Image 1 (cartoon, rainbow over the protein chains, first blue to last red):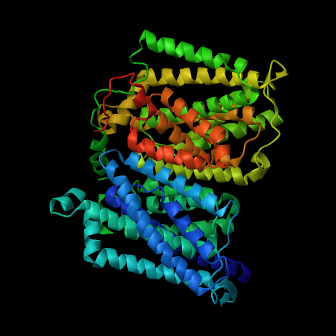
Image 2: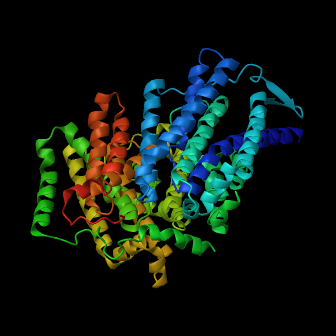
Image 3: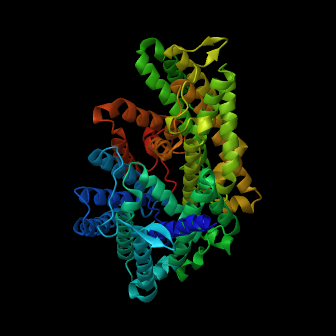
Length: 296
Length: 340
């Protein structure tokens, strides 16, 4: 009996860790889409860029310097990559949303192939920084310390993003743009600059999530589409353009992923799809979606 | 509330909704008919002149082309961009392969089983997807495709897991196995042409016209009394059925089906083929499929197996420069921008 509880406590903790990571990943995707209707299919590729970066820098041995270096470098690459993607989609602004999504799909293919050329086909492991690579006893069960820290870091980032969106002028601008883009443009705000900023920050979160997720997921070919799909499911369930939706969606999907895999290993992906289908039947625009998405 | 917000998004692609510029075959000049006849004759005669390896590449091209045509029924005709279409292709391929191994490889059987299973898989999963539109549809089909790919990966006893379903016997016609690359090619060509003709007829039928109406302005179609969700569902199942048939051809040609045949990369490459070729024209996607297969299989080995890098670059260029794909270049129809 205690064994069962312990096993499921581990699953719940795993779910929290995955959920924290998914929130960091999905919130950028959600805001960019909610604001500018650009579905960034290269979001998964950005995550994997972060993961490979972590693998490359910590390849010579785990150290805090290498890990923090990877985080910093990933943040810079994310900012630049997001800005570049935003600029690239700009000429397609007057065309359909699909064209913009297709462009990012092409970029995702190119990035994935380039990473495969540089780093090879074999999956790479990312060691956790020293001091976090052991395990901690949680109610008598050994649990990887890094994942506990990941839950904490995810919570801090979630609070940070929430404060940024809810309590700053930039955040007010973002929420206003989600609610009514044309009205924001009419009062003299350049939409493109808001878009570049949010795109760059969202991409930064994606590459940072890649580094943070490195010790959990490693870096491998095909990880980009797995991660992209999880992020998409999160934003569809939560509702596009909503920070709160992304948070709730990420926590729900995190639990479904880990409890599903623990309790019904063969049916895990069906449970995921079933949850998605259920939400869409009850709330076609997601739990916090719709035009009222401005309530972040 | 939900409906209002959905309608608010539509006007974006309503412009030009009066004329279906992508109606296949609306302008059938003698020249067009002559081109069709010559293309079919050249395709039929190809194995007589080509080396077996080239014939095999051409066979793969036809299989992939048929898959692209079935996707075009969704993307170009109905306006539903799917990133999970490879799932039904793979479902048909696994079903046809399994029947060939365990029951019979006599020719109509694997083909029919593949088509039926493709259609059933589309019917079982499509009802969720067709409730949405546009980019939401893209996301949902992506998720569905990935779930089915994971099923193929984990259902070891039927699919062979990560190793794939191997040891598929050659398709048999009247008791004779089609081992010769040329005979196999002709089998694929006949099935492909018949399926293409069926999709073409479907797209030209009143049903196809209703689908184009949904693509151009779904709220208006709903307002004049069309059950648009039922129409979209029917199109989705039809496309899945044709994709399943294409999958059975893949099983016959490759004699091996692996999870990557229904994964994200395949789904993305088919969508890429449709976009490169020109969505909504049905023949354009076949040209796009040819580009994809030739770059990946013919040029790819020279690039260290990274043909997909080149494809990604081609894709990005096409999205910028050729909004209507290769079909837009052909100039067979007066140039009209659907979305100015």
